[in-house]
Length: 570
Image (cartoon, rainbow, N blue to C red; front, top):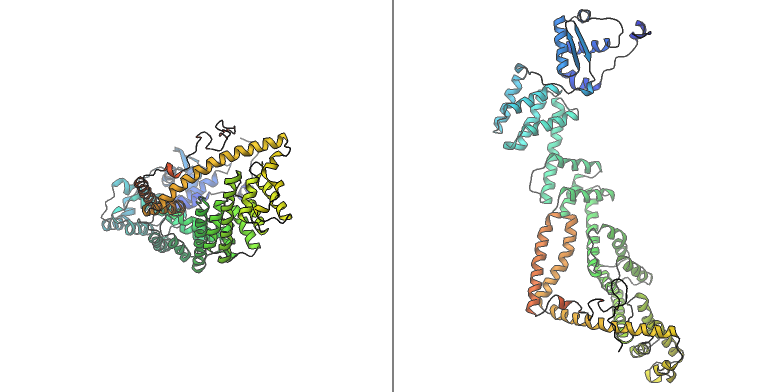
């Protein structure tokens, strides 16, 4: 024994700590004597003085035999360990480690409950097995829920499940209510009333989404989440209605987006969704023109489409610009930069955009003709600007092509053409016949040429050689495609495939349930396309360029960057 101890006065002013779990889990199922004996024994654990069971029983006004039975009861609950019954000696265990041993259940305690419960089972045409009834009675023994409250839970499950009723469902629902500290008849009745209201809401959402099953317990977590985000239930309905088909997880993505955008009421939601659909439509149509695959249009809508529409560009104008950008090899960022320039120049309305695109197409065709004369010329915005400048200098296509012919041996054809045309402009020369003799290619060839110039000319000759090969291959493929597109069946199948790819990309994000249907439609279209090609005596390979050299695809360079050995000087 320690050399020091508390005095009686000091001990009287101390506190006896009772764990909350004892109060919530064990106290409701114990009678007053059991609780008094447990608490007094807990108090005595702190006292250093000798105090036997007889004195404790006398002080509490409980017979000694009854006191022993009480601690045997608490031992069954795993709250104490009875080390000896005569004399009584008890060791207290922590409440949070208590598991609770199975206890014999008094039948008379649950006689009325059993009668009412079996009536509910008869209504559902169910007959629980003995072990299932044992689990239910053990639940009532180990939890503070009132019997009438549990019967209310069972009645709710009967109405909801009917012949599919299970003991597990009843116990899971009752356990959930106990975790929420809802034990009384009034508390459970209020919770189920709210739940029934939620069930109607969820059922309507299921109808709007085309989900053909009953709502499960876990489905209602989405409702709680959406309401926590501040969304009105009609706003959620609007989201489900806009999706038409889909899952709760898909709806959750859209509802979360709605809340993040500050649209919480039905009117705000419908306005946002309408605008969102317009933006998504613009993104998908432009992406199709650009040849870009877009899965989630939201980022493109926020960064590009919304700005374009606010500036006054309509869908038709944006598709025209998209077609032009595709020819230039542009994506969304480059198209956005181009539109910034057009907006700065005041080209916004449909007529202005149409005229601009027509002029750019004309210049692109001219660049293609220049390329056929002098070799590789990239179709870039700077090249278009240069051609536009030459036209503003009042040079005809004939003069521009003459400059291209004279630049055929130059390492950089466009700058050389620019030099020639600027010189002719200075000399006020605007027809081929007026060009001074000193500027002819024969005189140019007699001029002194450095090794660097010779190497550059050789490189230009090589580039022109491969450009001509590529042009022939591309022209043959374009000719075959033009023949195929004259066939109505091929054209329809091609259209279905192009539209279907966009629909499939959208469905993968917004309506996964429709993916299989879209894939089937695409498969049928692909089959129709193949049949049309066979009928036209064409193959898929005919629609693709057939290059002379399979190793470098008529580029002059292998995939590892080394020059191909297929070049032959003419």
